[in-house]
Length: 268
Image (cartoon, rainbow, N blue to C red):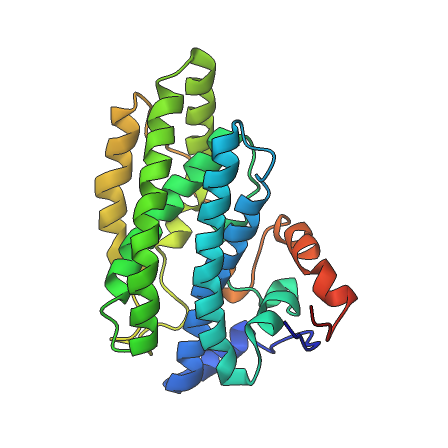
């Protein structure tokens, strides 16, 4: 694999606003945001390798992370062509403010229950997103989404089973699961907020606001059925699609990017 040293893709909130109806770059920016969501979540899940509560979960979370990495590669490869770059350029040689992931995906793992809560919310979102995106008029995005949704079905089932297991286990695990749900709930609204590209990609992109009903119909019911309470957690600020991130993203990127930046242009 070869990489070229690029410190920035010059993608800013201003450049998003300037896209307007210029379809090729607008589609690339949209794919970039989705790719960043998957890439950052994959990196977080990889942190559980050799740290999960049981060996089977080392494998399960690792496989879910690899699925997310596969989604990221497809989306970033598609996005990168608009700027004459590669997937590696976008993954390893952008600064923090150039990343477009929504903030849920960069949240620290916390304990295992926090990770399961984040995964439940994320998988529900991805399941609806990829279902709708598979009907996109952009054939590449549609194909990526159709393949990804088959994998996300497993991710959602995995998180639901662990939600039930932890909530229905000991008093301690029940409290930890409730705490995990309460903590991650703060980033739900941003997932389903409007995309900065607005209506410039009608028929191509999915408006996240149209997916919220799926979440509201499923996740609160799962929480209640597990004997937990639906959170009333105040919602955190958004801004991930505009490059506005929490203090958690910088250390994640430093670890993810260190090898490529230490040896730019290397092949192995």
